[in-house]
Structure formats: structure tokens, C-alpha cells
Length: 204
Image (cartoon, rainbow, N blue to C red; front, side, top):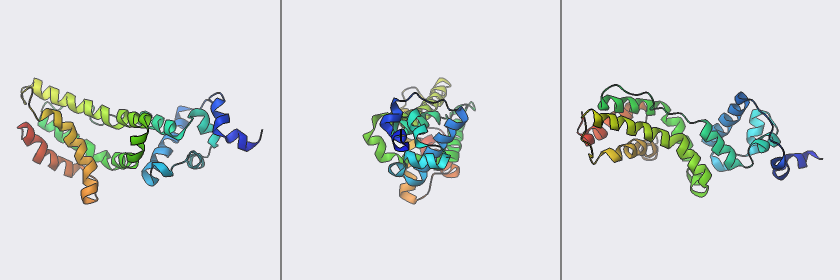
């Protein structure tokens, strides 16, 4: 068998998946996500990731049949709940802490969201993986904060602004680079929470 045949997706997909260590898998995932941030989704290739990580492209094709599957796996593996563990006993303070946490990672995650923008509209698996990795966990954590605030009596149950808080927090992260050419850092997000989010909930 020639090396070209060995490297072809049709051949290697049919092969038994090779075993790679978790550390090596993490290296592959970090490499593909960083290349997406730097170059955009369309410019990333399996060959380019293979070159960066010093492996054969057949190794990648054995693990993941296509680029969308590879990127979806990388997104799911990168899932981190940045808002997890925030519970100061005060909803206003929780939201300020969430703003600071979001500011710490906004540059990296917002770049990734922007770079994947067009691709996720045409690939449902990729879109779902993006939501599972970067959106749903943070929304769930924010909703838990809001529920605790309601339970403590800080905000009335059924307050009309409650359902819009996640959209406010995520919206400003996405929109600021478009409006100002800058990512929403921690100071900006805390000011946003104090000027917009807290008043909407009747808090200070």
C-alpha cells in the first residue's frame, strides 16, 4: 500500500481506531482550536494540525473521520464552566463575579465563537458541540445564580428581566468587538453589569 493510500480518509476511516494518550489527544484539540482562533475555521485543515502536532494526518483521520467531527470533539473536550462555584450569598455580587470571570476568558472564547460563526450555521453537529461547550453550561450556571437570588427574596419570582440576563451577558461579549474593536474585559463587564443588568433586576 502506498503512503497516499494510507493517508486517504476513505482508507483510514475504515481502519481500527488507534489508541492515543489523553495528553496527546489534548494536544490535538488545543492545536485545532488555536488554529481556528488564528486563521478561521475554513482555513484549518487536518494536514495543518498534523504538521503542528508532528503526527501523520492518518492518525487524525483514524480518530475523527472529518474535520467537523474533529472540531466538535475538541469543543466538547474543552468544556469549562467558568461561572461554576460562584455563590457569594448576594445575587448582585454573584453577577459582578460572573462578569469578572467572563472578562478573564472573553478574548479566547469570543475569538473562537467568531471564527466558527459561519461554519456552525451549516453543520448541526458543530453547532451543537459549540453550544454544549461554550453556551449551555454558562447559561445553566447563570440561571442557578438567578434562582438563588429569587429564593433569597432579592428578586421577585417571575420578574420580567430574569429570562433576558443570559442574553445580556452573552450578547455584550459578542457585540463589543464589533462595535469597538475590543474584547469585553473584566472592568468593562463589571461596569455593564452595574449599569444595565442590576438596574434591570431592581438591584444595586
